[in-house]
Length: 176
Image (cartoon, rainbow, N blue to C red; front, side, top):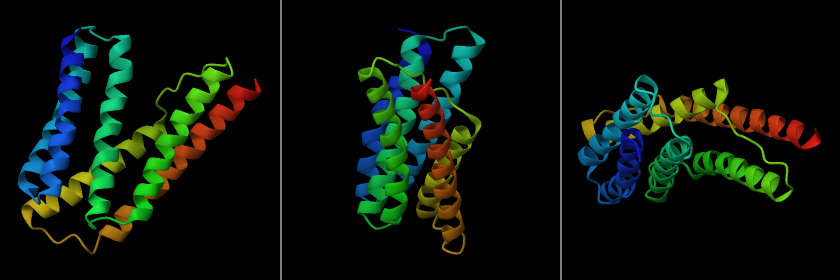
């Protein structure tokens, strides 16, 4: 168990806390915990690379923690009516497609390795920035209604582009 893995596990533990804060309308705490999770992601990555503490467990845990945070926040924000359900469907569908492809590949004895690609990194960044925008606007009382439609479109477009790119890679892998 490396220090970066412990930090990642702590980030996973923050997920239900952020959700409880959102559900209870405690926007300052939700925003603060979300920012703490984001900072911890940067810190564990830096430590893993800088001090050669990369591990196989960390390679699985880190994206799992990121996705647990994003998916949980998006679902919760949609349930309480802050963001549109269609956006959550797009975001969650991408992740379900990737997980399904990996499982199907494994079952067909053609395991595939899913490595981050540029559009995937842009997608994750856009999803995180959007969540920060929503939580930050609630916490700080800033009206962001004018930019929300554009922000939602950017998130949806990058999510669909990432989904398409991974699907194309998976189909090539399965055909090969």
